[in-house]
Structures are given as C-alpha cells and as structure tokens.
Length: 407
Image 1 (cartoon, rainbow, N blue to C red):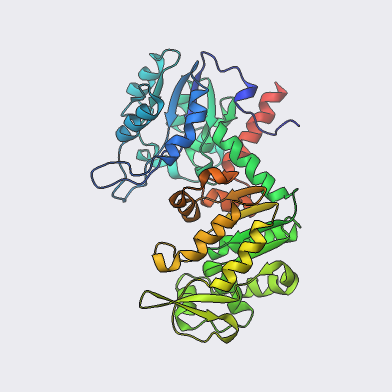
Image 2: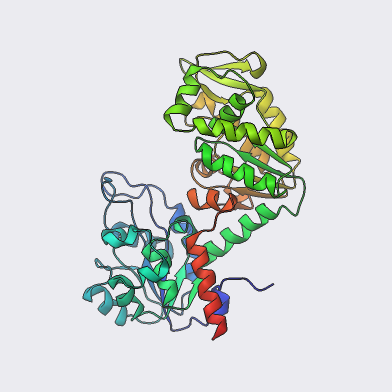
C-alpha cells in the first residue's frame, strides 16, 4: 500500500543536499556535557543511509530562558563520536557562513547548523506557507535539494524548521519518523486482539483524550488507568481520594477532567480498568490501602499490589499493548513497583508500544528497550497522535507528497 508521505525509498538522494530536521535536544549538565545520547542514537539509522548525500542538520537545544539553552557545538562532537566520522559544527543558521559552508560540502559530508531557536521566528506557530516568507526558509532552500523531517518528537508543533521547508522543497520522512508513524498506527488499529492501553502519569487531559479516542473508535478492548489519571477516574466513580490528592488535581487545573471521566465511565464502564488498591506515601514509606475503604489525607504515590497483579495478568495476555505514563512516582524507590512491574508485563505481549517521556525513561532504567516493539521518541507528539490529533509536521509531509506525485 502506498504511503501518503514520501520516505528515503521514494527519492534518489545520491549527491543531493539534504536539509535534515533532527531532534538532538537533550539534558545537559551545567558544564555543557550532554547527559543522555538516546536521541542521537535513534537518528543514526537515518544518517547512515545518507552516506552518499550531503547532509545539513537542523536541530535545537532547550529554549530561551533555560540554563541549557546553548549552542550545538557539544552536539556535533557527540554525533561525530557516534557516527565515527566528522560532523562539522557551523555557528550560524542561515547567514553567509552557513550558506557558504553548505555550498562547499562534498558527497558524504555532514554539518550541524546552529540552534534553530536562536532565531526568534523558529518557535512561532504559523502555517507552512507563512513560514516560507522567512529569511531562514528562503536562504536555506536556495542551497538544498530535499527536506527531511526525522524529528517526530517536535512534529506536533508547526514550527519553522518543522513545516516551513515542506512548501518549497521535495520533502520526505526519515527512518525515525517512518517507524513512529507505522508503530503508532499499528497501536491505533489494534488488528491483533485483545488490545490494551495502559495510561498513567500526571498529564491527565492528554490521557483522557487518548481514552476517549481509542474507546470511541473501538480500537482498544480495555484501558487500564494508573497514576494521577487513575485518581481522576476514582474520584469520578465516587471514591473519596482525600484532600491531598484532590488539591493536587485542582492545582494542576484538572478538576474539569473528573466530569469527562465520569461521562466515559458511564459509556465504557466495562472497558476502563480502575485500581482496586493504592500505595499511599506516609513519611516516604509505602502504605497499601484498598480502594473500597479509601478515606485518607495521604497522597497516592502508586497502584497497590493487588492492582499490579491484576493489571499485569491482563497486560501480559494481550496481543497488542500501548503504554503511556508511569503508574506512580517511580523516581522514589518505594513507589517504583507499579511502574516497573507493569512495564515488565508489557514485554510479554505480541506487539508493544511505549510512549515517550517518563515511561520511556523507566523502560531504559530497566534495560528493556529491546523487549518492546517500539519505544517512542516523542512525549507530547506521541500522546497527540494517539488522541487522534493531526500533527502539523506529518500533515505538511503529506501535502508535500501530494504535490510531488502530481508533477
């Protein structure tokens, strides 16, 4: 079946100058040392397929006002080490230095341009057509042949470096983008049943959007809720979760989500799995409490043992599992059990997808990345996609493909 976007396989890239949007944004220490190279490693498969092209990389690091908002010099050094070849750093984005550096490139060369967010127009949410009027698009498009978006994790934003070049250059998806779309589509289609979604963490509105989308579409057989998401559903079902937990929900602005959860429980009660017990935090000690007798002022920090056993059994017997968000405050040892055990259960399913962000970090801590079919590189982008929202970065690739095929 023909894809509705183009990939590396659709255009002869030999000798071409490829403007490649990657996401190399990574945690850094105060000395400018990159602490996590996972995003770098994820892009290696794409870059190694471009060894007969000239590759010009666009990426960003942090955002204005943050202590790690800095140049891309350290990124070029780390990428050089991982690629085992020189990745030149150009401390310019689209000025004469950048343009001349691109013109001087030879086949097989790779250069990394300066932090795209040093240019104020980069982070403005505009349409792709509006972005084409910027100096950045005009200057770089004049010296590049093809645009490639391999940065799924930032494709939920219509930023200049994500969507602006798709209007003026033949545009393709890199291997990271391609794998993200294919894996998440498979998770959404849930052709292999039973299909179970495990949603947790503290971003309640996102998880509830995903719950609504997959249940209304009939994509998921069950949605198991943990974390603050579970607290919302428990409150919606009439459980007294206590002032500490309600205060947290109010402080995060999620009070309105209780009504939405109540409505979903009314429509899909048998398909939404709620915890039967929880782990409370009492002076950093784990205190187990049954949900049916819950009436506490202590904060809920994890799902309880009975819930872990019950949910793990469901997850491990599923043919398709999609997991997003941790089950509890796994950063604290006493409350990591739920997150870790449910992740381990997820490795037993036929096809398994882990969303980005905190749960991906927990998977990495356990050393289980290879046991999952796909671990997403995008937190916000992944959850938006699973919620059925259209990602500007992907939509602009589709429009570019349509124009290319009509020529």
